[in-house]
Image 1 (cartoon, rainbow, N blue to C red):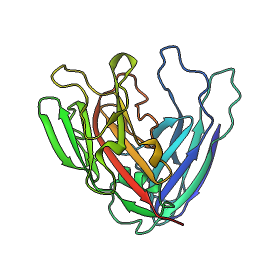
Image 2 (image 1 turned 60 degrees about the vertical axis):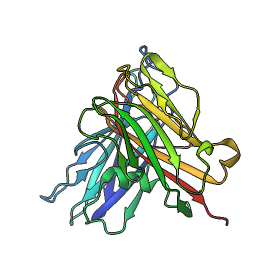
Image 3 (image 1 turned 60 degrees about the horizontal axis):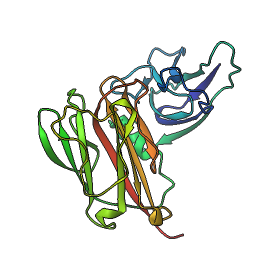
Image 4 (image 1 turned 180 degrees about the horizontal axis):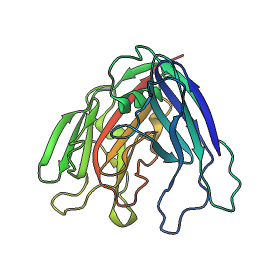
Length: 263
């Protein structure tokens, strides 16, 4: 079932809400079941869909997600199509559109999508540094702003650790790794390394949260970039960030930790 959404010129964020996936596939793979594609428009200029590594039509899980679309001066339209099993009644997705200021500027679409999930959160970003163990590179330390890791280079991230630089004690940030064979590590407090070194075992996803006693004061929002699936997320507050393609290795991540301000 398809919905056609008309967009104004500039940079638009589409927040798509679909039906939850209640029946897993036989191989326990999360199948993307919503397609976002360009709908023919009278003008000659085409819009650009910007939510995977690269541009073009996008598949997301049926529960929904965030897509960024750059629309030309004459405006444009996209089709949001929900797919289901042959014997399943499918209802259309709900699409909320928000325009970003400075929409004609060059942006990292994935970072725009990450920021789009939390514009309503009044607060400040907590600075972090991230340690990664990367295939053929070993340990690398990065400032945790924007994308971290060898994005686009097809080098597997095998472990990571997070150290807040202010506003949180390291032990107050928790994270876990998703590994081959469906293995999930226990929640690991910062700044310890989570994953493996020297075993050739890639990360197939991850999750991040703050300690339970701080969950009303902080939000954690994150994305992962995977070899074949591209960008997954934004995800928030301990939900697993995993690719729709089973066994797809992680190559980079982008993280925001936001300290809420008092109302």
